Image (cartoon, rainbow over all chains, first blue to last red; front, side, top):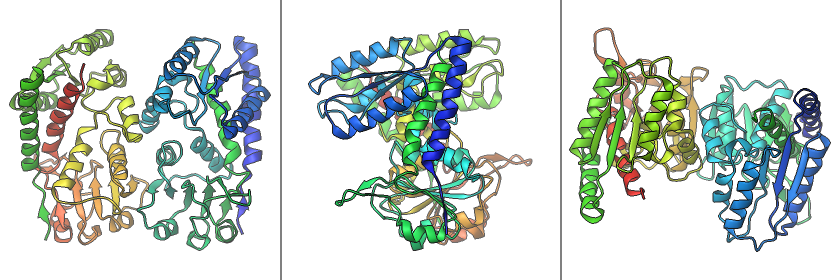
Length: 281
Length: 281
């Protein structure tokens, strides 16, 4: 029977660490980290996410601002807004909440954020620095997963890690981080033989966005199972990418959904913003 | 008994394709691709490599220049030289030959080349664009290997690809390219159980830089074996990372060393420079 990985508790710990460092930074350098979130239009999910980020930012002692242009904003207007934030020395982190309206090229906007202020870690420059093993803001979800592994005493070195999903936000950066931590890393997707791959995973990260794609009986006994899935079911409940009830019989550690990986994302956003502030000037 | 993959012949074909496109570009847009190679100091191996690149550039009809500052050049002087090349509209590709003298920070120099002119594909921005699956100059060696696979009719989709080695120049970009081509990709290194991993590889790319690290009997029967190793032995001969004589008994296709992957690198550099010229203005 697996131990549950309590992402809520670890996330709270990360925020407490950030808060302590913010106080030190204020005392020693008179510097207050600043995070600006840009939320375009009225996507209801975005509103919830952005509120969570603002709340966390206030809790850790950041300056936090929300800009909220309506969805008629043009791409050029949004670009010049980003440019203003790039130049504002009080703003250390700039986060443009996705999705953006269809008439706006999201990649163009993300690439316009200065890499040092890209606290989501989505800028191609930061993806490249991650690939090269250089310091840069890391994508928050996989960064948070690395922290969860550390918390449970799981050192990836020499282990077989299998990542299901190859998104730019989770799967690929996750694979690169596990590789940098000396795991032997396999990346899977819809063309992969999942049962065979999962059976060889000492560490399994499921980030496919398909409810219960990973059957519990595929899991290698003793594996660490990290479930990034947040699939909203017709009954309103959230389901992960892993068949939790059966997987927990075989895994040594497993993240619940919700309350596993989810809370880590915002916590690591706080960490990235703090680091951006520390590196500023 | 494996078929040999004739990298020399494929590289010649790539150069011929580039040459034909250069002629078209000249005729239609009056545009001649220009490649500048910067070679600092007197590294003897660098001299040979640079001569190979210049020769290929001339053969395909590029303008080609070599700048050859002595090894006393300061980092700032080299940076301003790169800056001049960045601004020169006749120069579409800028290649700073490595290694650089110890007093120069090679990463700093490579990051100073404009990503559009970084025809080696080493700039972090280009590594990030590769990771994101966006167009950008690709690192030449793995890019050449993708071409070799195409030439032998090997579509990586759905296959298990195993990459041994995780350098920024070969291993990691190779893994990302194979992943983009829908292979299930595993990256191995010194902490990996190589015999077990290699035994499951439909496509094996060996890029560890260790002579005959991969034993022939580990190879999965019918596998495609790509050997990036170029290890100079005490007797002066080149050896690959794969135990060739035994591996060729099991593989369906295998690259010889030399004459396999090696010739592709310069050929793809020509391709990258041509594409940089086509995208210019």
